[in-house]
Length: 361
Image 1: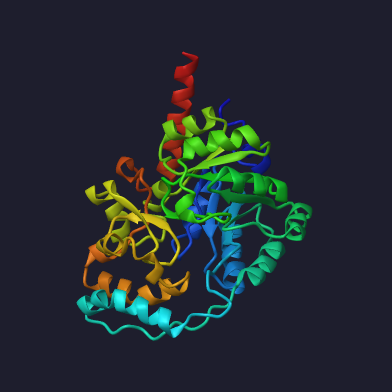
Image 2: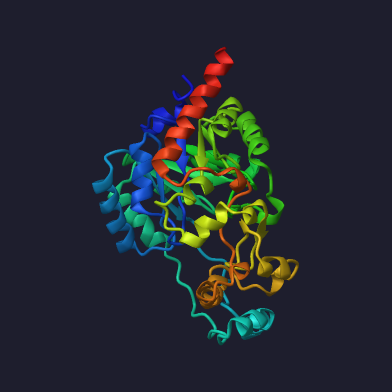
């Protein structure tokens, strides 16, 4: 059967369907548990959380489901140079963004405080609470950490945007690889070369990796229905990871206007932009993303750009200036249909079943 794959065996799930873990406070226990309880693998994005918050969320997840789930962290969680943020860089960025702050009628924020990496402390919690699956982006943890995960029965999953990254992850000793195509919503998790030079489509990337890598591959980007799942499996994936379609469900922590936008005509147009966080990510095209294109050298390093933009985003939401906000979303958004995670899971399973039944004919 189509659902008996290396991934379902390794992860202990019924169907090779994974929910993309959303960072930036967009994940919820309710969504993660709904997907896991329906036979897939729910995912929780925790890279912005403190160790204590991750511990508390894991406790809630264990209470909400007795099935496997995935907790996701970012290995490289900032791009700030050792010398810190210079006054000159901050001045250039604020000059570029001042017209938007003026339009919203709010003052420019103070220069962001230095950022302390949280990854090492977050890792300790992961090794302590032992989720069934620990996935990571923007790099790979040390060999020692991967070995500790293996001894603790934690399955490790790394994200690759290029064939080189996939080969690197396999050599490092991860258990599975997510082939993340440029169609996907959210941040591009590139780590060996710039995100701008790592823009391969999901199904091409999947086939390239399949030729060179022996461990199971998870296809991510541009998949939102059973046909997409079936196509990924037919090309050699062991599972499909679905982000935007689950983000659009009521159980996610996306704002009502964000979910509304994903079902609107605006979702036909998406853009890759660094303007909102300092790292390249895909969302529904916004005026700021269009106007800042080509001026990336004047954007603060991640996550200081997020800190800078945060008050502007809040003001734009309050004033319903939707064209100033980048609502995360992938290129597949125009075909979204479901607003309930359980219904989406059932639909994915039924459509994939039907597709493979038709093939048997």
